[in-house]
Image (cartoon, rainbow, N blue to C red; front, side, top):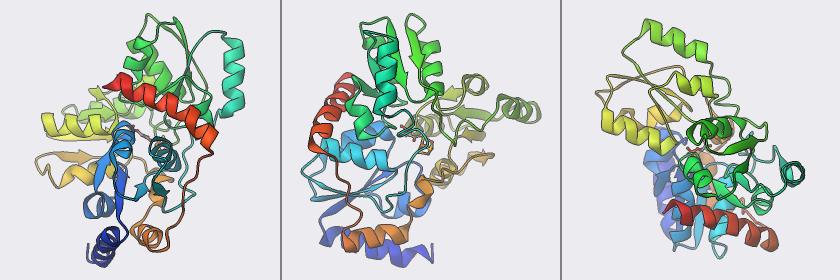
Length: 304
Ligand code: 13P
Ligand code: SF4
């Protein structure tokens, strides 16, 4: 904190001067999460918050698809991302072409895209979903066969929750969550039977099977706040435990966890420069944004 403090002070001063707000994902490091964010949340909460921002500028502390989603939902605002290279292994893994291929393969099936997609991918889909509402979105659609893209594991986990639907999926995956294995968790539980194991639904289904709870990043935080387990293993990105460990001293957070190399591109130094210089501004083509907005707003309406 001694190193972070001058940055935190400067960023919070500049935010006021520039009429800006910082929307930060739960995977941001504690200095960002606790020091400078005006709002923290999971992908769905960040998207909803973006529609409510009145300040002139949104600084998106998260990955590029999140900044694009804010721009799509609130196009009059200037949306900045502190590092344009903050991508995601899922976004752009299918592309508009892949979506068209799947539509040709399953005629009449609606396409549900995970929000972890580019604006163009969203524009080519019927409705979006996040990890917190995917099962509800799929259940609400009248069709029996549903295309989910691009995260194969989220789709497989949803398929088990909604067995009455025939869900087909693209074979994308998250680099952070695909590398946990069921055997790792079995071994862990054998030696630490009292640990509460919590997974994110981007983990493969056999990994989710080894957990006591699976949910979105905010779902995970709320579960730990409510249940206060003695020992918790969060099978997700490492900043999750760091961000809540101070407020929950009674919970012993144990490893392993994985770092998201994209989320970790966002740092206090880059946020300060972003605010100071007004960079990097996120633009979305107006036609693409209009179509993508339909898919994202349908999701938000169904989530209310
Ligand atoms: P959440 O919607 O659960 O925050 O997930 C976003 C994400 O990128 C997880 O890897
Ligand atoms: Fe993408 Fe996975 Fe990183 Fe989330 S954790 S931003 S899904 S690569």
